[in-house]
Amino acid sequence: MLGGAFELRTLGLVGGVLILLAAATIFVRALRARNDSGLNAAVLETFRMRVHAWWVLCSILATTFFIGQTATVVLFGLIGFWGLREFITLTPTRLGDHRTLFLVFFLIAPLQFVLVGAENYPLYSIVIPVYAFLFIPALIAMAGDYKRFLERSAKIQAGLLICVYCLSYAPALLTLQLESGPEPKLPPGANTRLLFFFVLMVQFSDALQYAWAQIPSRHVIVPTINPTKTWEGLLGGSASATLIGGLLWWATPFQGSNWWMAAAMSLVISIMGFAGGLTLSAIKRDRGVRDYGTLVEGHGGVLDRIDSICFAAPVFFHFTLWWLKMQHIKQPWEG
Amino acid sequence: MDKTSLMRNGLALLAQLLSGASSRWIDSQPDTCQRVYFANHTSHLDAIVLWSALPANVREVTRPVAAKDYWMKGAIRRYLATQVFNALLIDRTEIKVHQSPVDVMIREIGQQYSLIVFPEGSRGDGQEIGDFKSGLYYLAKKRPDLELIPVHLDNMNRILPRGQVLPVPLLSCITFGPPMWLETKEPKDAFLRRARNAVRQLKEI
Image 1 (cartoon, rainbow over the protein chains, first blue to last red):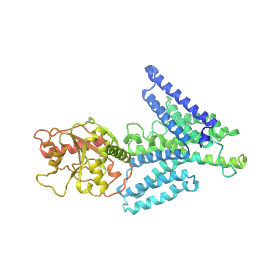
Image 2: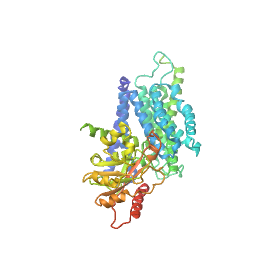
Image 3: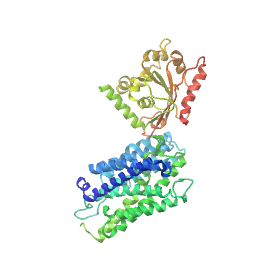
Image 4: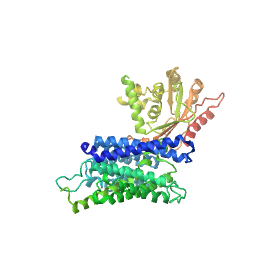
């Protein structure tokens, strides 16, 4: 893993992101220094906070990449754990759910990431949606409280699915490999770049959708759920994310004549990211809060930051897996 | 740093992590002056979490008031209560005339310590704050110089509810309110109602 991380293309990708972040920071500083920029102060502040969050995210990601696969899985495990805390905190549960929740937090959630770390795809792909999903309602029933039974089971299941199961597919990108052959792994550093590309594209499409939503003509998609998500933002943001993803083809395993594959994957990431943000907004609306972090601090919580990653990760994982399989049949360049 | 304060800081950090507590001070500031923090009570963790939410220097001079029968049971609890939290243990089974809990508290705090009390007496279900027992009133009457700080603990009843042994690591919120005092000639019931409302109002902010 270490050798792969120092590979030239990886350094190019990480270096490019650092330059971009530095540019964004200088840009924000310059805009803040001039009061007459005519820009909305709230928009500028949001942007400043996002740039700050990206620095944190990037440095953590870069550090864990260089330490290795296990560190990355543990990092995502901790993020998922915190996201689940925020999710369940805002979701009313009853005393009868207490023991189930204990097992969800201390058994099922860690187990999922242990299985991802152990690269056991047949197990980590079903342990939550099959076993945990049957186990949770049965355990709640054991506690004997039948009030709003189905609703309570579904809430815990949804939290586990979004914050733990879906998120775990992001570090699982590090374990993707070709099916057979003497050298079943992808070329050195390819998995690290795949995860970095994925996180980068999610952040890009989030930011681009937000930026495009600022243009004056606004057609809000679902005003009752999220007034900041507009058709302009979705279309413009997805289109520009697709373009940037296509331009980054060299960093992905989607190479050769397949530059359009990197673009198509970026489109998928962008749309799934949008779906994630909208879904979590709906849950927040129902609970009457603005951010998942309201309980934590004044600014947004962990779940507000990872909603798009959670929705995009499993879909990106499976699309990449199919592509790798197709590649292997068409041109067995590793075996 | 000696072993005890290492243990204190370590446990405070652990309590903070487990309860995911974020603390807010509304019209109020942390201070080492003598105070009585009074809060709603829903969980065995309440005293520890409130204590750990205070800054380290304030924590040093703040003693939770706790039930002797619970905290003297078993070596770990006893060690935590007497060595780490420096708890002021009250014997609920043997209350004598000249050994009333309020007298014990006043004697123990001297001119240095602050207290953490739960005036409801026992843990509630987290829905409605119960009526306050009169201890807080007598404490305020005998020591009118103490600042009374209302504290609201949110979500603790879901982290470790009554009758459960295993904690669920949800997030909680601790809100400290502005200091209050016993007004001159304020009747007991009116004061206790006012104190209870002060805690309840912090929930809405």
